[in-house]
Length: 401
Image (cartoon, rainbow, N blue to C red; front, side, top):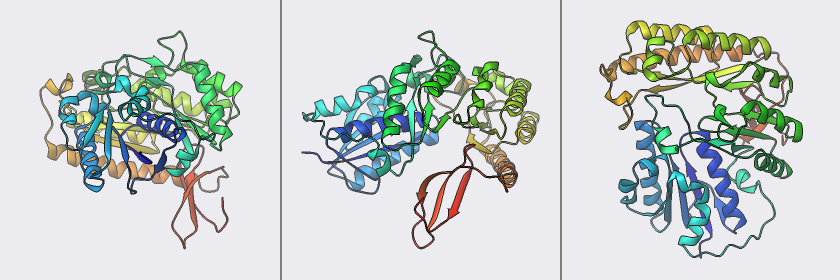
């Protein structure tokens, strides 16, 4: 009989949200959730395929776990398991492969495959999160995407948009709070598209959650900039909605954005930033930038650097473009040399680090609440966590925070 289970993920917060849900279900059925370095009877890996590097990391993680746990049963799900199901199923040690279309039933499929009895023997809830050193919980509010950015393979892996009901989200938030979670993060592939399949919308959902729950901190996952209506900003008058947004820019060049199939021009992004910062004090913005998209010229690149500097992002996730088979972008001419991508990546990293330093320096003297998320090893007795606008803080204290 299986006892220990290990759950691992790569990639987006949506993958993390799914992993947390599986952890709770397995825990309710009597499994012991163990950390990533511990031996386990069952290992579940939620893979990512958004970039070629993510694919490599997913395969490396799978092989590493098989080497370190040769007697464990490996269950693989996620985007790589969906896009490359045949190849992945042939990987040594893979017992069960579950595509994205079935991942909401992953726990039931695992229990059935191994003929395990479902006995709910625990009445707590957040323990699997705490075992994994998590103080905030991710909630999948939405899945899938109706847009067709030319570089994106995720649409093919995740399928059509599907929204979770308000009632289910409210019940999950209340249950998490009951067992000690103080912050939840709404996530989705296209979070701003929430409700497109059921006559609802994200602004109305957030207003509802703030009205009917008492969770102290509500945070939003990545949002496409074209998904924010003008009435969205008024939600932040409630301080429980935390003033941080991750808005993927991808490029500061309209020519590149057009080839990417993006629905927001550079000047529109800047207008959105101006509106947001005018209405939300202390708003921290973070973003994604793709470097070396096919046809990106020196002038295109300079426009990106200028826009990034103008916005003063608190953090920039930097991705070197990698062709993904099955996407339009992979067929475009004028693919960029790897050496040029590396040079531009280093240039952006330097700029992003300076912008982050400026954003952090501007916080000196501010009094904020920090959600403590962990502690350093003794004897430093340092605690760390995040401010409401998602800036990292390290606190030296001998007290248990």
